Length: 321
Image 1 (tube, helix red, strand yellow):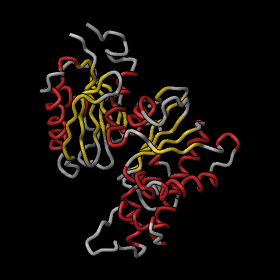
Image 2 (cartoon, one colour):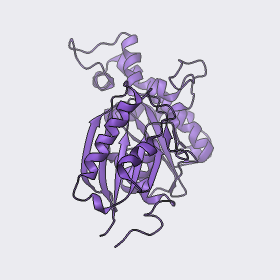
Image 3 (cartoon, one colour):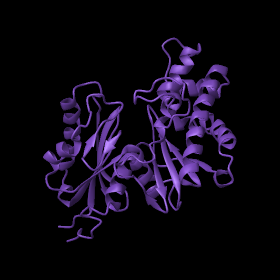
């Protein structure tokens, strides 16, 4: 039987998704469960196992040649462990070992969720055809991954490009990661809403949307506090992008995640701030574009990372009849 599929798993603080993905990036079958992020480690693994088990029960499972996992991080691809900032029960948790109890001897590729999104957007999305790009997700957290010289560069542990935990304010708020003034602590959707509410903003209707999406609606309508919350987020993102570009050089930034759905409420101040921060000749005029793969970016990217991993069954050319 032909083995031409990857089982992809995308693990975040809100949801755990899985899919069977073919060599063109199409999702043949998709399942999803909520992440019990505040529960004990075993309960979170049980949710992952439920997703993977649902994939194994599909008729196409015998065609699966490998498993790709993109997880909130940090991750350690060498050890197969994860320590997501937003899943406190998982610290040095043996995720790959846990998944293998369901998938058996199939090769497993583990990368951080930012690297997975970068791989997906480079394969099928907004970074397709770009040689050097930073791909970011701005949602309840902020993550990223790097495409350099036309290839995903996840680094030794799978975390390279994790821009959310670059410090852009050394006297800033303490971040759950242990640092201060991290991009994520300022720019994430959670922290956009936190800042706006602390500054006195309230939804127009009692009981209305008090998340970053609600702040975005208010900003689009001209609310000054909401606009300031997004401008602050954009400046933190721009500072992190400029610092990263100075180190590794890229021409394009792709931004996805829930906050990116705010459109020009986010992108306009981001481009403006980037013009102020990225001033050296080799980092000027960085292209900023929205991601194209939406909520499936992590799944497509987990599969892409698996297809491109030189140690997997697929990449060694063993897939076939």
